[in-house]
Length: 280
Image (cartoon, rainbow, N blue to C red; front, side, top):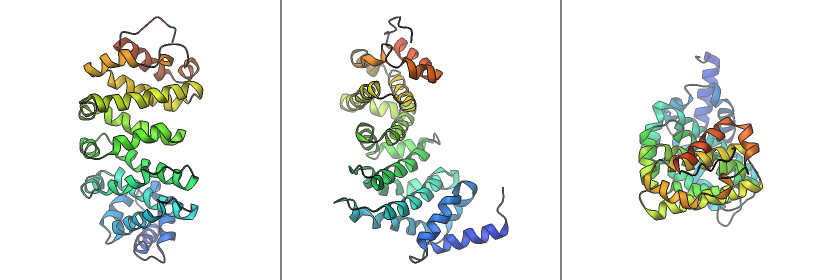
């Protein structure tokens, strides 16, 4: 749907306002609120002079507040609006490639590496994960190759172990999408150290989910296990280390809520030759 001229004029003005520190905060807010209704916003942002530099400036300006942790809600919200516009750029087919070539996702890794559980930091981590999630959702080989050349896997594993339920869910989704790519699966299963780290974190998550079930998160965890079982060496190792809650009726309620969990879990047990006859 094409923007009406008055809407386009407003959008162009807000984009111009991003380059002015005095008007940037309002422009970030207005553009981020409307990004899903503006199909050509990403190209406009990417090709407008100084706009991406302004977004990066917002990100970099926050670094001093990360260590020691000293981040206010207003600071977090402002940068999250900038990250939302980056996610818009990452999602668009025309701008995704240049976005990667400029190595812009690397600027967000400092946010993913934070430990503070305060809400401003959690919002920052979750929105940064959203940018990476938007990239992997496209099933673009270039995206996977780029991410495998960075430390995104250990960052995601750290969040999967220590994050909130929502952050864990997005981080596990990113790992799942990497695993679903042949290059990603081969990379993780290439060495015992990589595989064992992934298997250890997934195992810890299963034990936590057995105490506090979360259907959506469990679904992504099982999908990761199922994909790992496609690799012969990983399949052999999983026969020995698959957590017991996946082999009994622990998650029967989650299975009732989502038929795909039943399908994937049964397929996993079949792949591992561990279909022990439980009614799951």
